[in-house]
Figure (cartoon, rainbow, N blue to C red):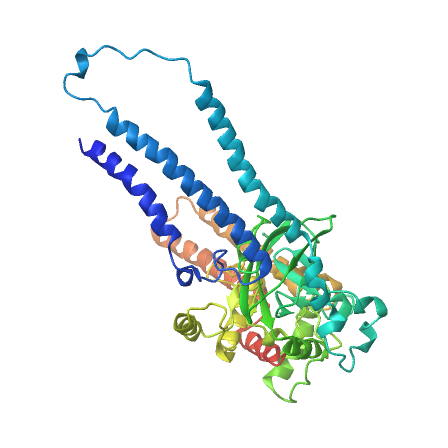
Length: 482
Ligand code: CUA
């Protein structure tokens, strides 16, 4: 009785619910990664295709649902129907069948037209956008940028190479000299000029990733050994949130990135800042100690810092301007004050509005990130990797064999062996002591336990590659890299 009532109510309520949902205001959809709040032509095109499909489906739903409701009510069982003669079964109605097939094909065609035109439109910068997006048309000829103005560049739109790695994104601007080869690449947060079409090249150095900025464009995969491309354009200044959208290993969900859409003049300034080296550290400061630790602890094997000749790695994110980025660890940790940011978003009803970096939050994040990447030990005495599981930072222990820091690996090995031996010896002593008095047994057990505890502590110490004080100094150094 009740279920019948609810199924009827449900049938009638569903179309209304669909209408209510479709009527939700744009402001409600303005969350950080919303495809329903497009802020660029590519995302807008994709949003339009989606809405075309939604409306077509709503019409179909009302049509089919309406017929069903009509049939259920009109032909419902009534008292006395038991005695009525059975209705003769028919063998179909050619008119209805052909009509429905034609209508289905019609619906598919209606969806196919905007879908196909969107696919063509999204493929590359459209001809009508090229004239206004040519580098020469808007990017000022700043001092130091001249060498990049070869004749061919004059006719090109801005190009950005996006390289996917486990688990972060590297961005390069080949026309502007910001490349990994030139030790000027940009990790995790890139910048584009407002209202200018940008051609994006997508590459992967390991597994398949996917590039997706819900409010601006998406998604196109980054496939190893294959050149993919797309184009994007941001029409409103702001801070946008991107995400790897293809499962790529342990930390896929932590593989985020961001894009800052800025005024063209602001973009030129940003490019100049990216070309600047880091500032010298103050003599005798914690940062100076941190800089020495950056080399001693082999951070410099993987990371590049312009202005620090010892740090010239190309494998990991470039850290020359790490303290000027609003996020850390593949954009997973946010360097802004979370309360202030939330207040700003709620006040403006716009997630692209961003507060500035908070130094304390940034420092805490640096310590959390480095300290939780296998260089510090947790309560269980094992290296902690809890910020981003599977991340590669702890791999740097392997570099200790290079002789740069001979202390790590052999010491850890020796301490591990000592612990295993202490555990075995304690167990053996207990077996050998079989038959002795309880008091003697307790003494033997206590002695064995003490050795195991001491060996565990020694192992923890050996694994603690960075002491808390060293971690603090390292963070202070990184904070100077703006
Ligand atoms: Cu990269 Cu998922």
